[in-house]
Length: 246
Ligand code: ADP
Ligand code: MG
Image 1: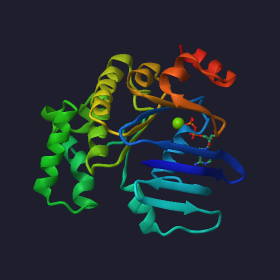
Image 2: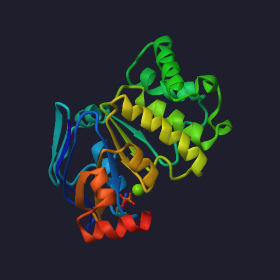
Image 3: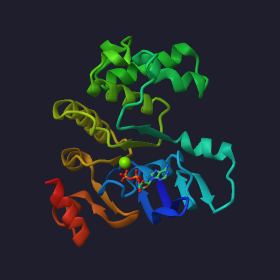
Image 4: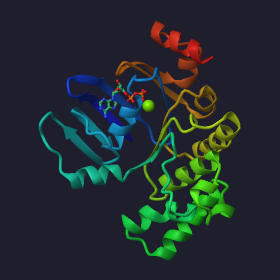
């Protein structure tokens, strides 16, 4: 359902992604692993076009864009593709001056122009799904990190994206709070939410991912079933990296 073909991303002269071709099936959960600086965040940001690939093709469902150096893509096309995605960040990035429920409903009212009542209804359902119905009117600063991240997940899901992109969703949390976020993501996985999760958290990755991609220095070194990559990687670079996690 989602396909990146021959993606290259440069920042100035520095090539951060080299000819990356990966695809994600509907309902699949993929762990994106690899050393810091390897390009995980950049790859996620090239899926939702927070970063514009230097070259290559991004397809989500029926929408695709071809990128070429020096050729500007229409903003409307980028917006259209981006709206197929939801993103969860390491540091939650909630709007501090909006309550939990308003964080979740914001995009529905401002971007999708839903009536306020309908947006609030949807936001309530999503807060309930992440176990935070009772915190609808709470300010982000009064919530624990785990609760803030669960609100952020509800917010990302509000416009019913085709894929949920998570950039190290548990790495700012201590283990107990990380656990409640893992539980929510595991529940979404069981419901068939398509997810791509950049993570160093082997518990998260091995609990919920069926697929794994090992990205090192901007190159996909190895990809396949998560169980194989975690327990029996074929490439030495992957073996060395997995050994540092366990
Ligand atoms: P990871 O998420 O795996 O740690 P990143 O995607 O954040 O890796 O970074 C990959 C490389 O791209 C790093 O060398 C980083 O310094 C570089 N990089 C990321 N974002 C930018 C940017 N906006 N400008 C310049 N270089 C960047
Ligand atoms: Mg990163």
